[in-house]
Length: 318
Image 1 (cartoon, rainbow, N blue to C red):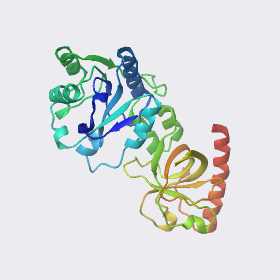
Image 2: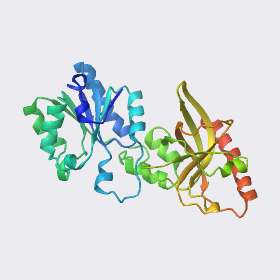
Image 3: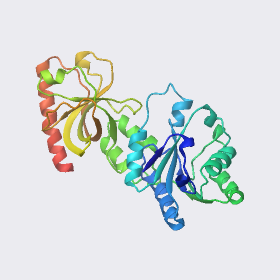
Image 4: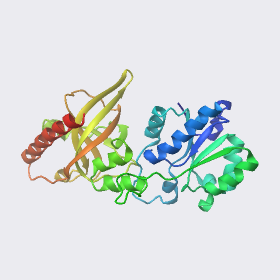
């Protein structure tokens, strides 16, 4: 799958595509309906199937002081879309010029002028363009004169709503993760929530107590509830992917009075140095809130108990 992050990189092979337009943070089942609809139209027309999104997320541009909220990085989004059979992800740089582009100009100059789309799939609630002036109705109105097709996808209701009429939303998933409800987040996403990153060198305290961990910075990712989790870890290597179970912590490690938020994972049956490697860390279950321990022995005892619980959980959820 092609990842295009500069509109000047658009080639003839990317033009004339069927495109799903949106932010698609999380790529939850509601998003997947729109993306798959675009895929169906692409097959009918014999056209490329692309997703058009924005990077960074427009919310990061307009509200830069908000706490981190991303559910998927650009890298993760691209890999998920590839598994869905998408031919290309066009991640339009969301900078001042784009933020100030009127919706009509965005459709006319970018979607049609640069990309030459043949068909656009858009969610019924999606807004775009300066002052959020663009919506499905505007796209329908412009499509006839600009000669492209349109499919408008209604919001998809989640089975977890109290009245079964609550649509899937990225906000629901963020709320579940902030509450430590990893299971609920997984149900809403259709898969466990994951964080991807590069393994960095930590303070190596884990090695001194018999539980060496890998450490990943969360960057723009949402901060889930601090505490202990059961994880699966996909270690990406040149020869493929190796997967391990694990247990670990998200937080600031109050026992040691640290301040930086880190994701730390003790991987089962693993003893290699892998600094600089890329990993995808999947949140399988929440174990407990982050704790401050009075002694190293108490910390070791808790980690041992967490390991036992994690192994039982992974055996059930394998």
